[in-house]
Amino acid sequence: MDKMRNIAVIVGSLRKDSINRKVANVLIELAPAGLKLGIVEIGQLPIYNQDSDEDPPSEWTVFRDRIKATDGVLFVTPEYNRSVPAVLKNALDVGSRPYGKSAWSGKPTAVVSASPGVIGGFGANHHLRQSLVFLNAPAMAQPEAYIGGADKLFDADGKLTNDSTRKFLQDFMQAYAAWIAANAKS
Image (cartoon, rainbow, N blue to C red):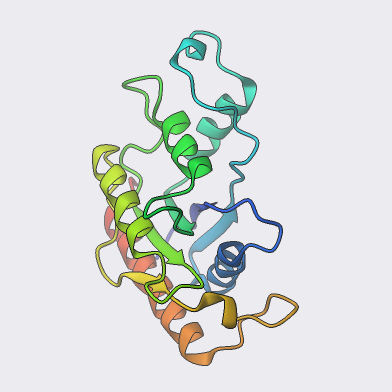
C-alpha cells in the first residue's frame, strides 16, 4: 500500500467497559502499515431529525466532515435485539443526510461484531451490512467477523489474552487493508 489510508473506527457501544471498544483497540493495534485507524465518537450526536437539516447541529457537521475525510470505515458493534444499537443507527442516519450528500457513499467498510453470546452479534453484523448496501458503502464480504464469548477474551486491563482471536483479527485486518486498497478512492 503506497498511500497512508485514514480509517474511521465506529464503535457501536457507549459502555465504559465496552467489549466492542476493547476489540476496536485491538484492531487499531493490529492495523497493518499503510492504515491509520482512529475512533470517531458517536455518543455526542443529537438524534437525527430531518427538520434540523436546514440548520444542522454542529456535532452533525463535525461528524460528517470527519467521515468524509476518511478513506474507509471499520464498524465494531454489539448486538441489541438482533440489530445494531440505536446510537449506531443514529450515526448512520446523521452521516447519510441531507439526501444526496451522504458521508458514507463510496467508503469501503468492514464490520466486526462482538458479544458475550455464542453467535457473536451475527444479527447486528448482517443488519448493519444491509444498511451499508443502501448507503453505497461497500462492505468487505470475507472474512466475516463474529466474536462470540468476547467477555472472556480480555484481562482486567482490557488486553486481549486469546492468541487464536488475536491471529484471526490480525488476518482480518490484512484482508481489510487489501479491501481498502482495491476499493478506496484514489
